[in-house]
Amino acid sequence: MKKLFVVLMVTAWLFRAGAQQARNVLRLDDALKMALEQNIGVRLAENSVESAENNVTSAYGAYVPQLYAVASFNRTGVSSPPSIIQDQGGFPRPIPRTEQYYNLYRTGFGVTYTLFDGFNREASLSSALTNEDQARHQYLRTRQQTAFAVQNAYLNVLRNEQLVKVAEENLKRDRRQLERITESSKVGAASLADVYRQQSVVANDEVNLISAQNTYDKSKADLLNLLALDPNTDYVIADTDIERQIQEQGSGFGIVEPSEDLTRRALESRPDYKSTMVGVDLADNGITRAWSLYYPTVSVNGGFSTNAQEYVPATSWSNRASNVGLTLSWQLPEIFGSLTRVQNAYVSRRSADLQLEQKERDIRVEVKKALLDLEAARKQLEATQKSVKSAEQDRRVAEERYNLGAGTLLDLYIANANYVNAQASNVNANYNYIISRRNLEYVVGERGY
Image 1 (spheres, one colour):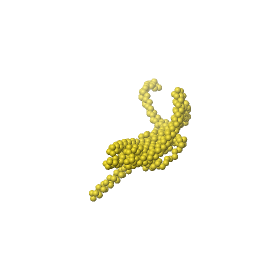
Image 2: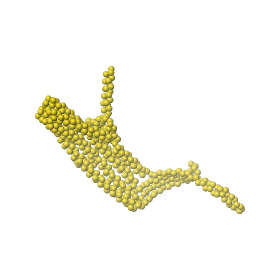
Image 3: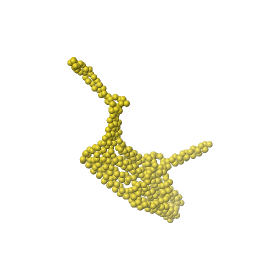
Image 4: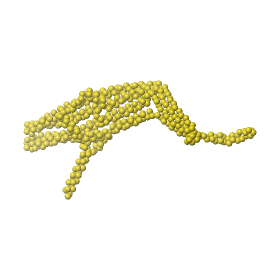
């Protein structure tokens, strides 16, 4: 019974540990979702969109007529001091102090609507809509930037994990070799100096493993910090899709479009380029608003009012008045201030054109550099794939020759070091190629998140 209880407890603990580990597996899609929901830059960009939407609502308010309503009550008291007057017989007659009160009830309502204000109202609405559009483009690009940063950090963790495995395998291999050399030394088939040399190699491998593990742990902490997660929580960073991509890279590479086609697609898709284009429209609206001071303002108004001395619902509308009017007003603008405003608006327009031109150049350069990086990564990957196969064969031959006494330990060291370097280079080349492809995707800017 006691044994059964122990077995059940161990099984429950293993099940709980397995469930906990399953919950803490972090795939790339999960990491992207977390980052896009919690990243401060993304949230600030989202707030900017909301603020721009509120400004659009306010700009539409300029097209709404201005309504007013009034209701008032005034009570006026008139007091006359006492006086003396003479009657018809010539005798004085005193008149006492008199007080009289007058009430005035007044109600009214009216409306005023601006027909024309020099296109300032239209330019303000256009600017608000354009600002909203620009904020949305900036929000989309911020999400793309955040997603690209998360992908780089995530892939860097996987890269460092593979480098740890390379260091572990190398340490295991050299330890086995140390055991063989030690046994050979006991029967006189190997010198004691070879044992010491191999012990030194194993110690150096242990140092390299510690360094690789430390680099892996720090890159993992950086990723968790980027995702606003607790770095002390043990997350399993694993994604089968990336493993599949690495396997597919061993059999071939995808077709990449020409630079001009990718540049055209980038100019059509990049949210930051669209945001810069919107800046030109904003400058145009600024010119319109600057010139609006030189135009007159036309408005219509109408109203209705009543007044009565006594509040009697049946008769309070007897004294009423109504008015309808058209107002044309024009104020001569301040000469130098208004002229400066117009000139600055045209300067802003030219600056917006230059920014758009520079943005296009930047995108062309970014696409070109991304293609060059991708091509270099492809060539490096092909070279390292061949290098691993060659280095592995050289290491096997050197090990067999040493075990047979036909080779030296130095030859085995060199062959093993070349093999480890080839493995590490292949790991780096695999992930560099994936990152280069994702960088090209980011530069083109077609993918939304």
